[in-house]
Length: 266
Image (tube, rainbow, N blue to C red; front, side):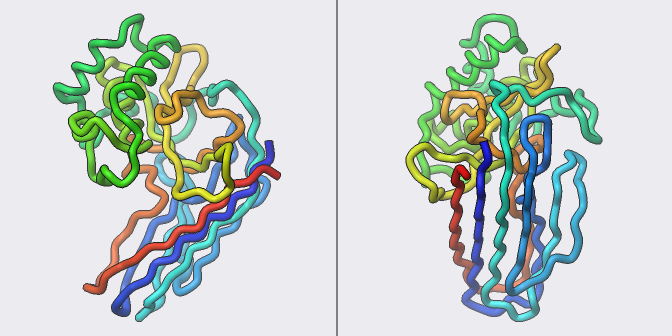
């Protein structure tokens, strides 16, 4: 399937911003299951300083704001061809050894609620059956609900609240899997919805490493493995390492954000 993506983010500020740097992880990468046919990132009200590959081989664009800017727009657009692999992404590669993906982070540390949930999942940890059962257990335990969680929530926070978004589902999956000794990673990306082209935000899911298969994806929020509607942008140990946008700015004015995101089949 060939997907066309247009993702525009506009930042508006009540007071001029005299210095700001942002890291963008908004460039899909070609993998065994997707090929980037074209991609372009443009910045209005700022400029792209450099691009580099991070430790997960994500493409990172470092952008600066024009001094005194009150509005900055980042536009990413292109086409990505995706093939169906039943969620199987292939062998491990990159700069980080596989054992590093067993390391918990602040967002994915296993506490009492994670361990309690983990105790309800039977079968043998690390098998496909066990991973699908874990995904189903999280899906049944934590309701998907927008506008009620915070980007700073941990896996324990989301379990305590009983609701969250795809970021929270993914963090819980990572916390459980790592506690059981299964290497896993966070994935940010785009998802073609069945009922509309316009999207509200990027999507997130998780991948676990399965012997003899390699990385396998699990979209906990939708209770499926990624198919041809999914485009992977970045991976990391948690949201912080795969966040589409992160950075810093100096200024006391309020910030407002406007996002226009379309994902369509060509």
